Length: 188
Image 1: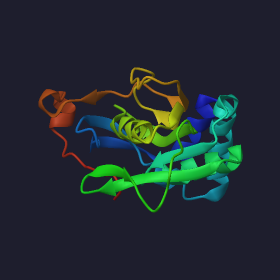
Image 2: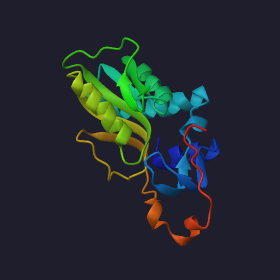
Image 3: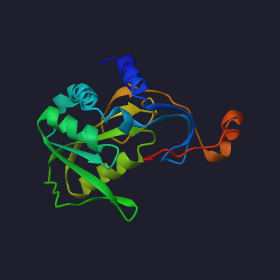
């Protein structure tokens, strides 16, 4: 899939929202990717998952891990496409943890999959968990890189769509955003 085809999927599904949004990172933006809207249709999941799997297949991952909630659907599909194991980390008392009996073997080759990355906080948290269990993080794959490659986490990163979406600290909003009420869509 080309970047323009991926962007069209987000537009067609209503997953690319325009307005004034507060991102999970605390930054404000004119655009928000509500990937869940795109990923509610299994043919779309399969198409995006296949395209992402093709980008990372050569890494040789044996396990895909995703942070809940955003990365779950896409992560599971990428794992299916790669014919690997799928596990996830989830929030417990405000931070991501490995639960539900999931184990990571020392040296296990792991790919992190997320839906959208802006600053990479949840991805870094996931990487830290894998490394704390002595797993080997081979890379990070995502549907949308909102930083257009500016976010780095010390491993190769792969995306279907890389955009330089403006994001502003709350105390540095341009006048048009400051005049518009902010929405925090997240998982709503």
